[in-house]
Length: 74
Image (cartoon, rainbow, N blue to C red; front, side, top):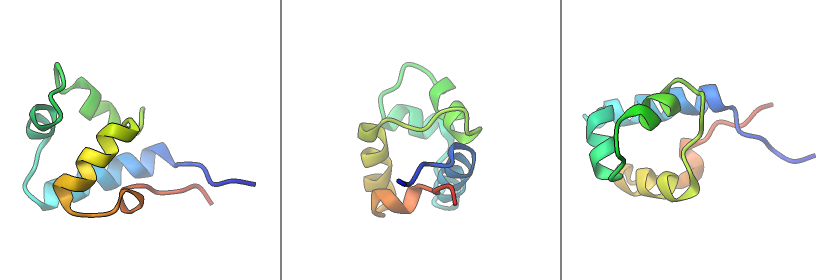
C-alpha cells in the first residue's frame, strides 16, 4: 500500500502556512506567475493539489521541504 495525499487537509495546511508568513492568494498567484488566483483558491479549498513545480516553488517561498506542505491520508 502506498501513501495518498489528503487534498482538503493539504490545501488548508498550505493556506495556513502562507498566511502565517504574510502571503495571500493574490501574492502567491503573482509569485507563481499564474493567470489568475482561481487555481490558488482551488488549492486552498482542497479541490486540487498544486503541481509538483508549484509545490517546489511554494516550499522555496516558505523555506520548508515539500513534504512539510503535504498531509497524507491515514
